[in-house]
Length: 233
Image (cartoon, rainbow, N blue to C red; front, side):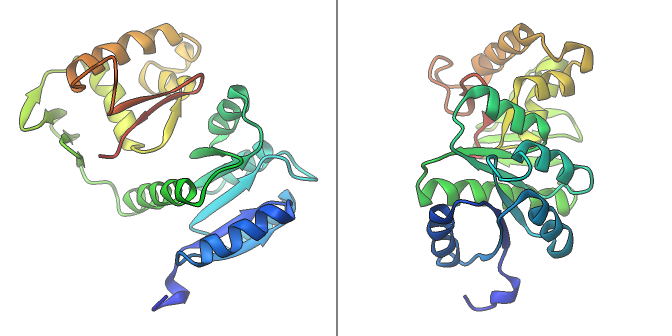
């Protein structure tokens, strides 16, 4: 890499030797710097001292559960956290995301999938760090948050206030999965965190307005049992 010291720094909090042997060359060969931590406590110290661009976090650590590490990181850091874990149950994914993780990749995974998720995390962190523009362009979809206006393929789309708030929340986190409870809290308020039927109704309405085929959505993606993701393009 031309300027290695400015390459994104990935903090890998993982105790599995085989996984580290896989991640180390995969990340370094694609231009990332890597710092490793084998326990949750060590990972928290490294995160505090090195300010990594992304944290890759295993849930099954020898000292702290990865969800607890996520909660503690979120007490002071808004940097991207990408969970990598052998736990494939929906409730584990939801717990990690609700604790503050940005995304979740289930082991085993390929290099291509991991790199794609890392790029999303870095883009999102860059948008937040720069002070997000009032206009978001996501492929053929344009959202002007200043004017609360939505345009698809050059045509204005009329959304109700709740439909707009739901789309705006997904767009603010484009490419990231948002859990049902996160969306319900942000759009309807904390009292509605378990009223998932509200979300199903309004997502169906949004898809009718924004998808070419609402039954086969390409833009508003369902993460089964977890939540929804707005595609970036």
